[in-house]
Image 1 (cartoon, rainbow, N blue to C red):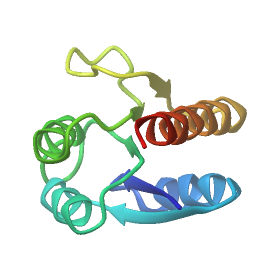
Image 2: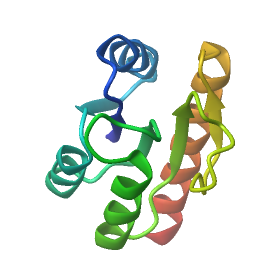
Image 3: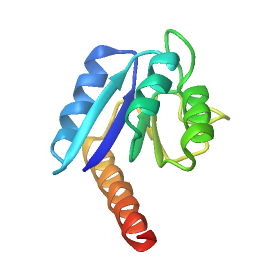
Length: 122
């Protein structure tokens, strides 16, 4: 089962991302609005993929991603942000407003690659 962590403090955008990812078969989803919440959720249920905004009302998505990667090792990330040139974005970026087709394609690709890596390591 693939698991996606969405880090987004704007509820309507978070729900939209959730609806797009829910269409990818065999995927479960957690939503976090704050940096600290994202870290706790990732620790409890390690994600196969993280979709993250950069700026949050409490903390930043980039700091949450760094902490999660320190705990869990490499985790694929797609930043979904209104600030696509942010210097701390060290992963693919999809600019807001979101193009649904790009997000679905990128997430599907990363989840497929992650599954292939797990199978190869077994």
